[in-house]
Length: 312
Image 1: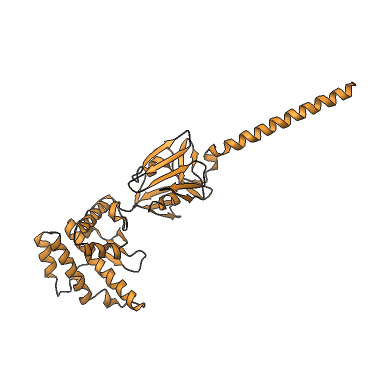
Image 2: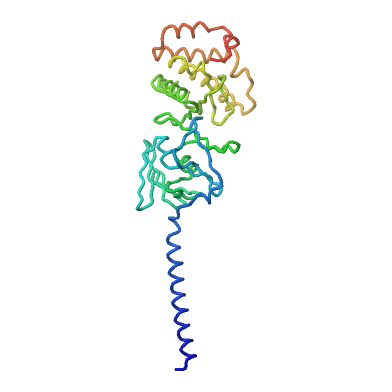
């Protein structure tokens, strides 16, 4: 064989070997991609998280914005929200459970499972700086949390609903507010069933504010409660919630019957107030409220007391 033929044969062998190596490299890389750990170079910004108005603090890895999606540290957020978190590093699967939900998320997957039902994600869970990071909105909304984005402060705002039979009412406020409202709602639940049904039908949210008032037109109907009211006794606070649930009923009852603009006198004025007051008194008596509270409520009959008190 001539020298030139030998060179050509050796070149062909080298080319074949290079092609095999390249194919092996591509195949290996493609299998590794789902388990890529992103560094800070891929992150466009950090974000904040609040739960019922309270800002969460993070020990090392903060929430991040990655490709226009907010990802949060798994344990810092979900354990704070009451979930038990189990991470399986071998399968890259996270399982989160509370009293009502089991949520299963796989790193790199565009779907997750909640109570056995598959749901979609627009961004997968990922490992960032050795921390498991989850896309927050779709996962929390599947567990009945309310999640919104405040662009000006770059904050994910989470409203945490009460658990048990009060999942219908979302409570938003600081720790003292939430505890006191929960106690009042528990008392209502233990009272007359028809009053319990009235409250959960006509109040969908209770939130902390500077002035008390029932916002009928919001979806859901929202009762704003001021400091003077939510720091009163549990029985009186529960009675006030019942009272304003009646006003919400008055508004929506008229709307359902006539399907038009609801005049102010329907839910505000002597007749409307007296109807709400009588149901409030019935409730206070039924739950064995202190006699001075019952007597005070009775003393309001026939008076225009709401012009004298800026808040309850």
